[in-house]
Amino acid sequence: MASMATLFVKTPSPSPSFPKTFNTHFSPALKLSIPLASKPRTRQRLRISNALIEPDGGKLVELFVEESKKGEKKREAASLPRIKLSRIDLQWVHVISEGWSSPLRGFMRESEFLQTLHFNSLRLEDGSVVNMSVPIVLAIDDAQKRLIGESTRVALVDSDNNLIAILKDIEIYKHHKEERIARTWGTTAPGLPYVDQAITNAGNWLIGGDLEVIEPIKYHDGLDRFRLSPAELREEFTRRNADAVFAFQLRNPVHNGHALLMTDTRRRLLEMGYKNPILLLHPLGGYTKADDVPLSWRMKQHEKVLEDGVLDPETTVVSIFPSPMHYAGPTEVQWHAKARINAGANFYIVGRDPAGMGHPIEKRDLYDADHGKKVLSMAPGLERLNILPFKVAAYDKSQGKMAFFDPSRSQDFLFISGTKMRTLARNKENPPEGFMCPNGWKVLVDYYDSLVPADNGKVPEAVPV
Image 1 (tube, rainbow, N blue to C red):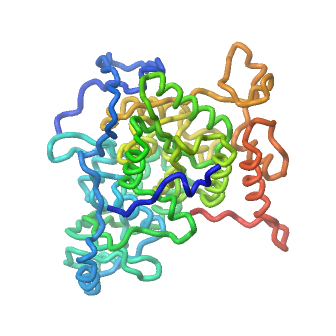
Image 2 (image 1 turned 90 degrees about the horizontal axis):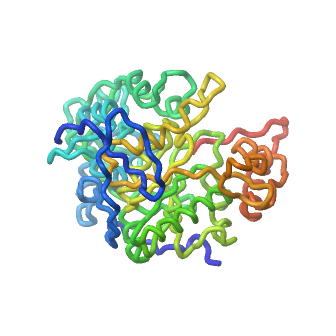
Image 3 (image 1 turned 45 degrees about the vertical axis):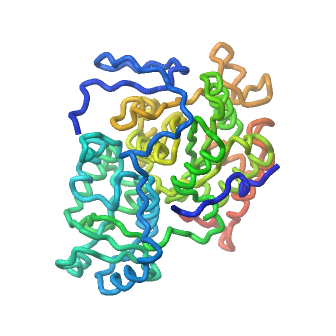
């Protein structure tokens, strides 16, 4: 079986008023209706086409400086005020520069920030609307603001003072943290992971402008070959003659329930008339909270899933999505879906409580488990994307494998939660046969085994990435 590294070939990096009613855009084959206050318009039948879906704004934005101009830009940057980027800031530069947030051309100015917070969308010059649900902003403090002074451009550098980009035509405006947090997460409760990591101690000002990125962002962690840009993914889908691309995001190891869902999705797309649907298996690779399985271990596990034949390498592209994770539920899942449009996906698989988490204080989920898929079906700017809600999969004790849940014989099914899965792996216990491929499970066990107690008897804390 081919390894994951051979699944693709890397290529060089190359409004009117909102409608009063929103047309739901679940795939018609799923026959799932969402009740709305007003009657939705009749949805047109899906048109089978060999062309990939257009990026938001009609053109994929890539913000890299031309090779012939790099020397000039480096000399220019030497005389500019400098802003040092955090690791999460650098991940956002990665996201913007490759076009995941197209048509955005840099860190948000105030008008874009406010539209994102209050409308979950941006209105373009031609009057059209594209989805944008999470603020992509760069915070600075009072001292940095004074240093910038009247300059219209700043240099962005990494933690080692290496030049990353120039931010030009800048605009500095107030960072209203409480408003940002409340509008993005729907709560200001303490303990939100991204807030603690990137907002609470950030500066009181935001700086927006257009990016000119000197070099593509690399992490030198052995996984850069899996970080395909939207342009590279589009080229790969075209090379494979894909007439449909269905994206599956995850931040957890793949078990056989996930695999069942993905293979069944391809079967349904074939029944709908598509000839060569391609799966984009797209694990999130930016910041995640400390108790999530780290990216490097997840990628090892995904590789075993392919090697063991659980997923077909011929119809699967594995790539890393560079965005940081907010854990902002229905608000964030719109960003996850929108970014995949820019990569060429016209179908998006959504499950229970997407991008959700437990309430940081109370013993309950922070978001309603069904709101993510409902919001996606109505979100402005996502009308072109077909939403594929999860079928519920569980372990069927009568068949000894993962299967779609059948309420008529509920006693035959066992639901193995993520918490239960992690507990089994920590204790080096095996799940029921058929829950996860053996080699994939071994990777998970090895990860938890690597968190061996130190001399003081304490298990070292995982580090968020």
